[in-house]
Amino acid sequence: MFSPSRRFVFPGALSPPYLCCSKPKDQFDNLEKHTQWGIDVLEKYIKFVKERTEIELSYAKQLRNLSKKYQPKKNSKEEEEYRYTSTKAFLATLNEMNDYAGQHEVISENMTSLITGELTRYVQELKQERKSHFHDGRKAQQHIETCWKQLEASKRRFERDCKEADRAQQYFEKMDADINVTKADVEKARQQAQLRHQMAEDSKAEYCSTLQKFNSEQHDHYYTHIPNIFQKIQEMEERRIVRIGESMKTFAEVDRQVIPIIGKCLDEITKAAESIDHKNDSQMVIEAFKSGFEPPGDVDFEDFTQPMKRTVSESSLSNSRGDGKSEPKFGGKSKGKLWPFIKKNKGAGPEDFSNLPPEQRRKKLQQKVDELNKDIQKEMDQRDALTKMKDVYIKNPQMGDPASVDHRLAELGQNIEKLRLEVQKFEGWLAEVEGRLPMRTEQARRQSGLYEAQNTSAVNSCAQDRESSPDGSYTEEQSQETEMKVPATDFDDEFDDEEPLPTIGTCKALYTFEGQNEGTISVAEGEMLYVIEEDKGDGWTRIRRNEDEEGYVPTSYVEVYLDKNAKDS
Image (cartoon, rainbow, N blue to C red; front, side, top):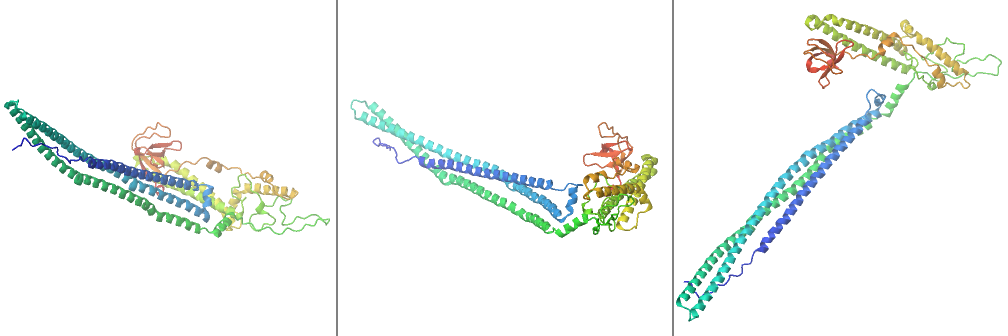
């Protein structure tokens, strides 16, 4: 039974857990800063690798440009110089530098795919995970703070009710001691005191319940929820550290993987350098520039003390002024010719290259024969293609008129005959140089007779000029004055014009095409034409209707029949 004389006291020793609550909050702030710093480090490393890949690409590009810059130009004198072992070794070095540059491109590609790309995706995942963990941490912190506020409210209510009950008890006791107060007033004061005491008891019970609940929530917060969140953040941070370490290993491994290939490139350069043969290069120079002349004989002594007619030594550098019948001979023993010091004429030389030393002349003649044989082969290929096309027309008259190709076949036959005559002429000169023939054939002599007459007079004139010179020297001006000019024949004029492209097959127009743009040609459906240039990948084929009409048509508009030789070439 409730005793009116019982006085309520405020329960003490409930220290607010601000200290405990403030620490995790502070640590969350610190951890948030630290994990953000970790992400910044990861992004900085990604940027570093990205710049490294750009450097590798730039370096590879510069190496390729350097190699391309020093590559020999096709169909140039520089390309001919690359037949020596030293220049071949340099060319091999340039090619290996291309492969060397390719390995740096591989480094860039692998670093981009294995490091930059992977880490960029991982950073995005890491940011989402970090955001989730700190969201859970803030939520837990807000929950415990809400529980603390509820406890504080319950405690203040209990404190207030206790004070009210104490005042009501004091008032009841005062009324009970006063003799002037009626019994009804005393009873009323007693009931009021009991009510206040009951309210205090209810507040006490609520406060105790709230306190127990808070202590349970606080225990779970500090011993379960927060440790779990901290553990997840720790694991996340450790994974980040492991990941950046693995990326650094990959960074080194990407370089290490190309080291063997780079080593092979360097080994090939070393091998090329070791293949240089100075003796072979020297021999090639000798073969390229040897003249075939025999050294001049001894110069006879001419005695001017005797009152006799001065005779000319057999080994003199020139013939007498009156002797215009001598013919220059570059084969056999040529006495008195100081051939290493004779300067070349700057004008166009004779057709049979007789102005050159024997060995150089042989090489030029052989080169000319090879070129003419190639031209003959081209003409024969065109003739074979036209012959096949004519056979197709004969078998299928709807495809074209067989007589339309007769004119072109006749032209090709004439060209082939002319070229064969040219080959015979140059082979005759070549046989003379190589010693297969004792002297020129009558036909070759007739063909070069004009040159021989001019060459003989030019040499005699040159000899007379040298003899009349005080010191017997041969100057450039004299060489230019005696420069030989060979008039062009009708045959030469015919080949001075630009030679049209050879036909490599035929084609049939599948559709009508109106060639309105410059460089195109109009065709009618079913028309047969010559193909002179295949489609280079741009969708256009170059065709010819006759000698004056040629141009481009869409490849899809024609059906092409390439000659077999054109396909093989």
